Image (cartoon, rainbow, N blue to C red; front, side, top):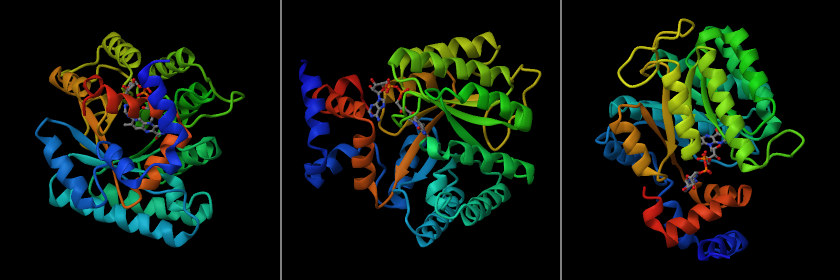
Length: 327
Ligand code: FDA
């Protein structure tokens, strides 16, 4: 076993016993900080590179609607900060943090309230995709809001799920060119009855979803740090005539909206593959950084590590081979 492999196993095995300072040290790179001010400071710094942002208030699955109220209010503060500091940023929210699982009606009302307020500022809201228990509900929220005239909202689809291509086709019918996606592999290790589990299958399925979204005329946020996904997306974009500095030539596409460019963008997590992101930026691609912040940085870091042990490898690499994955 390689040194990185051994260290990665150790990181996962000792997660719950890790001293808080070590988790903080590791997460400092991936989490902007505990407060909104920390997130604003990071975005101001990265704005000089030409990046744009999506902001995530960290939280665990909630157990009471009071907590949902906290998230709603915090995101309203985030919107104010985006305006005050004139940041090129939008919002990423977790539907369960707004109450979708414990009180679906109130959860929907909370999300609607935020999306409505965002619409008044022409700001976009992305519904992050959580595990398969809420895939359908999350998509349904987006469709319902569009039907109410709130089109500044879109969802995430996960390449690893078998259902994803079908979801894109269904959303093409209901939303047409107003569909606005983030496509990623999917962080949750889903059962093999409903998802691909092998690396190559997940990459191929994610790439197929990129194609299907581009064909449908949708706005596509390609969220990956993986070279085969990025290379595939670049060639799919070029075969659709899309790329830096050109208007979206797809006859079925909507005009650029909500302060985004034409048709697509790349998205990466804060602290991951900075050099690759900066290369895409220097080639003229719109590149958005996902900025998580919040008091729950510790719980978030531990949960992510337990949910998907491959992150142990990233931590090990960051620790032992920092030059392979600079922020
Ligand atoms: P892969 O995991 O193969 O990584 C490629 C390389 O990138 C690694 O070798 C490593 O060097 C680096 N790397 C990747 N992840 C890293 C990390 N966390 N820390 C350090 N280095 C890392 N998932 C989901 O289910 N729902 C969602 O809503 C979202 N939202 C989302 C937004 C954005 C902007 C991104 C980039 C990702 C997500 N994801 C997500 C997570 C996504 O589904 C996926 O789990 C991760 O991006 C890892 O997959 P990659 O395609 O990056 O490849």
